[in-house]
Length: 345
Ligand SMILES: [Mn+2]
Image (cartoon, rainbow, N blue to C red; front, side):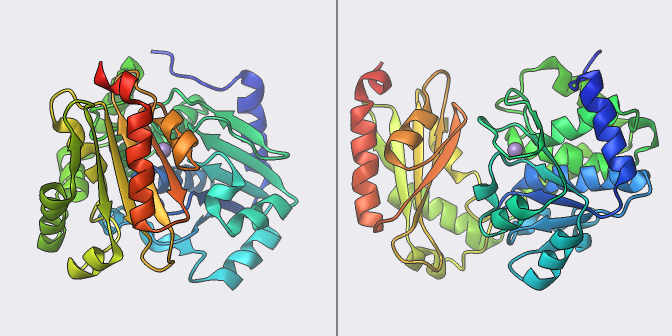
């Protein structure tokens, strides 16, 4: 199966740039998810196989359920080690941007990235990438950036020498970005890739359990509480929203990752087309994070753009509101009502 993505020119340039660089950084987006971490670890492992020693830098904390991945001890957090990261940026000769499309996705680090005078490569699957003076390898149809890492390593003839420590994060990133291969995962290439990853002796069932069956009892109670007490379901409109307040997070000993994927749960109600999650920030007042999920051709990214200062994929997007949770709730109701015609069908 031909799974190559890059033009010959891109492949050659990428090889040259890597070969010529010795101070390489790998960055991924704020609040890193399984794909951000998985693709970064996988790409770092590939670069190490070429004799490089890249630094993986993340803007802030990533969920507990990813800490078991190999080599996470090498990940540097900008929010904890700003000075060290700034020094690394000032010396870098090649920067890889994985799983994000614009510098603002890495918040304060975005400035360091735009100001850095070195070669930059963006490898990503989000829509509308933009990074000045960079080689942009953007494939919005791909399931995940981890899939892109696999395909690029494959095309650059790195696959043979890759070991389990490469295959595990790559598989993990593909799995998490597709909800365990239940959405955005119909491309046959994905299953070719999985079969190749399995040849590196990964235990895919264990990877699934490590990620998805890794909750505390508090988290399960919290998720149950939100569905039971907080879900607003519009039967006639096949849409749902729920709110999560800071008080509730404290009450249920919330830690990062506890509510991961919960926004998908209302979609399990027969016929549901749209699910919206509204969550207060843990520190900042009047900041509400919004997650949206939809099915089939209902464009939740349009809803995100129009009502929640956000955007994203057709069926998975996000945004944020600078207002109270009560006002956010009103906006969500308004959003659902304004799409009533499309939702009712
Ligand atoms: Mn991704």
